[in-house]
Length: 188
Image (cartoon, rainbow, N blue to C red; front, side, top):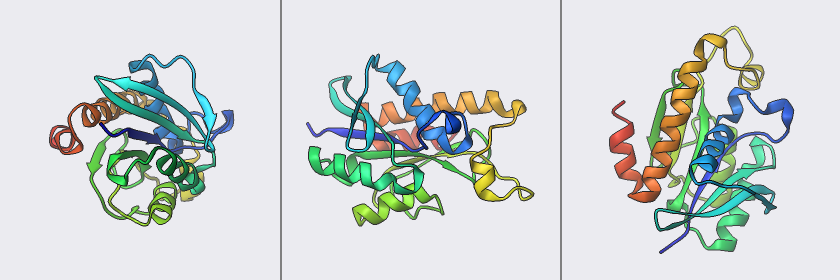
């Protein structure tokens, strides 16, 4: 059975830990808990854990290259473990979705998300399943400042709920398949 990979996008370091742009890391942290990950390894320019989830070999990955170079880590890991793009799930923030809303897509453009764009370019395919996590947007704040800012206090409950949904969607796609997860979670 092929190895699957779940990649949460974000930026390394305490400064970025709870920013909107780091929602992918936050979701993968929840998946670490669900899979009872005790330790991660720093390899391939990423923090990663290799686990078995319901009989499936799974790599959980948090690239440590900063967002815009996420493809470096993803491609290195995919090449080493011979993981096709179709077995990679990328979790990233999305300005065009309301805060806490998730949307699963099997393929498509990056929608302007720089980490996803770098992965698409380096893998030479748009056929990479992804879980887009809504962070909303504020037209009064420059996009680069907004994504590196903190969620507003009034949206924290929606963010926490979205993180749980994204975790469940990612794990369902490992246990069954991505289309099953799409059918279940895109209806919400």
